[in-house]
Image (cartoon, rainbow, N blue to C red; front, side, top):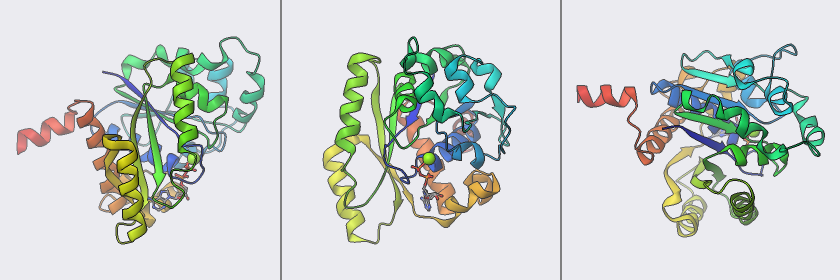
Length: 267
Ligand code: ADP
Ligand code: MG
């Protein structure tokens, strides 16, 4: 099995990058080769993985404009099985440079097709916009993972995202599905959080993932050290939550990871 998950929500600050980094890291730590692609010109995933600025390095931009293959742009990270395609500032220009380009929506999909079978999971971190970069991710993806904050206006913007999903399905990528919605920065003690999560449950049904990501300072601190939260503070609630999210997604996709096999064998 090989699955490309786009972490998408056109709202900024909802936990896309935090989810992309830590989910990809947790999947790699489960023993599964994983690739994370930073599709955001802000390059927060790139920085959060400890990949400092390097203007000589190939990036997602080079892949989209055809300067580099995925293999040429792939770099190692501090986590053994986790590889990354870094972002760079010039990625913002790709939106304009590709606007009249041939098969401009399919650039990432076609580039990833060559390496797809090498990775059980490829995670795409999207920018906070429904632009051509996000469109490339949606066209490349098999499933959307939508991080949402449990706040009063959580559903605002979601109808726009869902109608974008429908449009991408009918125009470019008929097999794209909503993989799941994950609540981030969740505080179960507040009645607002509970109320919002109940509403989302009604709206999304079993697409609302059971795992919730709590508000946890370790998650905010880890990227400034260039580490996933599992490396930075493995016992933190944030680390536990992202490991749980990885296991929930594996279970839903009926993937038994090497670590899961070991856990079963020793149980
Ligand atoms: P996005 O990529 O959607 O813009 P980020 O993942 O960058 O969102 O998160 C926005 C900010 O919130 C960042 O500073 C991040 O460190 C912080 N953050 C994200 N998730 C959590 C969490 N569960 N607990 C605490 N801080 C978080
Ligand atoms: Mg981000």
